[in-house]
Amino acid sequence: MVKIGVLGLQGAVSEHVQAIESCGEEAIVIKKKEQLDEVDGLILPGGESTTMRRLLDQYDFMDKLRDFGKQEKPMFGTCAGLILLAKNIKGYDQPHIGLMDVTVERNSFGRQKESFEADLAISGVTDHFNAVFIRAPHILEAGEDVEVLAKCDGRIVAARDRHILGCSFHPELTDDHRFTQYFINMVKSTIKENSK
Ligand code: GLN
Image (cartoon, rainbow, N blue to C red; front, side, top):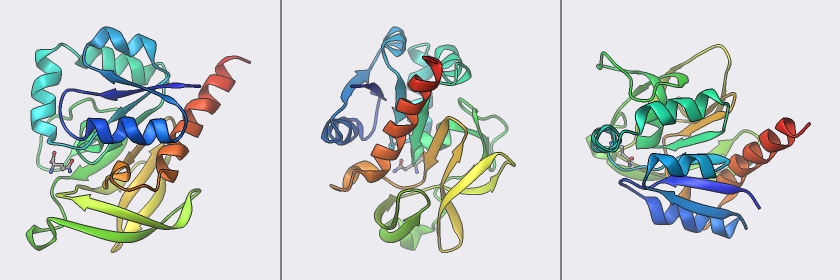
């Protein structure tokens, strides 16, 4: 069993815990930076990125989170979590954690589409994934090494930059845990690589 942390400062934390457990793995809610040493991979949930950033600073998480990513431990940002991981945020001078080579735009599906569901093809996962979007960002630009995994209305909504995975939607809000499983598989291959 692998141990997957879910950053537990704000947002859709318990839903991710349930998704990880449904995949048969152990989930640990991360409330203190020291707990990051206990986990093999980390999910940054959806919620509100500016609130989460404030809490990350308050609890002194930023350096430790950047180290986690630099050690090539897998990280998965969903919705606000994707915004936290992006190297560039449209309209902002500075990124937050800034580890994933993408430019994101916040709340980019427009007011009339505050929340919606879409049937997505996700490369390497399935041709049909019912994705729930809530005031979602999208990826405007992806760097050379970034693999685009899914698009919605021509916009990039899921991508992978080596050991970092990000998506605009909330894969934890339905009973379909195949995208969570994709991340768990990334964590398992990293462990395998490192034990060689
Ligand atoms: N709109 C939020 C933000 O910009 C993200 C929404 C979400 O995570 N569901 O942080």
